[in-house]
Image (cartoon, rainbow, N blue to C red; front, side, top):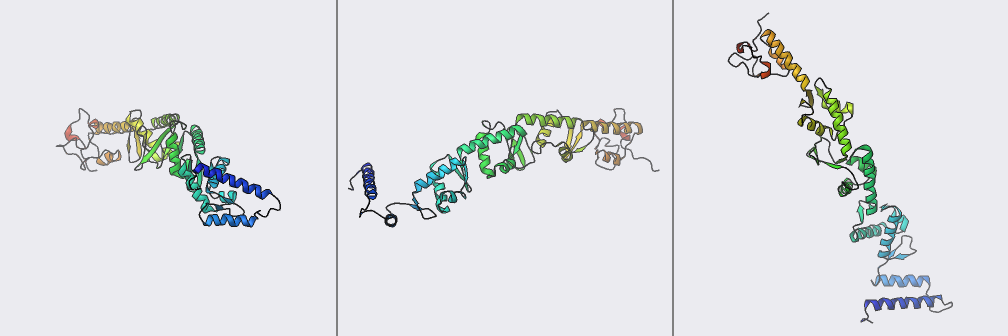
Length: 330
């Protein structure tokens, strides 16, 4: 009856199913349907678009799209929340095309399951991921995005999403990003390393103390790359922590062209040049060049005795006309 409500229609359908089931159980019944009859009947209903069914790949069964979706969910749960679509055709005996379509429908219906490339991931698995990342972070102190990608073998953008959603909660650390080759963290820290990293406060404190100790002990100009490699400072945090220590005055030195020169060395240079000048009343240009104290000309004339020469190098009792006097020819 076309006027039956949907509920009445379902009740009527169940009644007809029950009657058919009773008839099939009766032996020697002329109305009993053979397997081929059932197959033909189902195929006719499919052809007439009365029902929508999928064939299993072995041809032994039919299933609805809803049933396929439920079976995929069950398999995902059984596999701990992570399952490759490539495994499902063999597990469910269903064509990969139908597997993909059903998986996409599942992710559309719920935000608790994600399709990442060719894998299904549940929210339960993502929570477990965050806990594992936090455990590794607590052991190492610093983790880069590339290390986490290697650990889980998932797309970097997806892992970044998991980190962002859990940082400060399940993941007890801080986020460090890169922009234009410099990594910018929550406190403005910078790094020459690319990508994304997470770190703990304890690790940063440890690195800061080590860097301060090593650079305080330096007595001559030192290449940053060499000292970083020798003491195995974190490539991600080393540049920013060194800059922070110098800016706050906890390290006294000069940084230029990748070389750190301690103030102790600079003062020794100044004392040496000043002593020579005081004793001899002149200093050669090439000597200043060796100490990186260049002037604007080969020698400074009496009309401009201070040109190019740091104030600290001019003794108070020195006569200006004798500054940088050319030595007599030998």
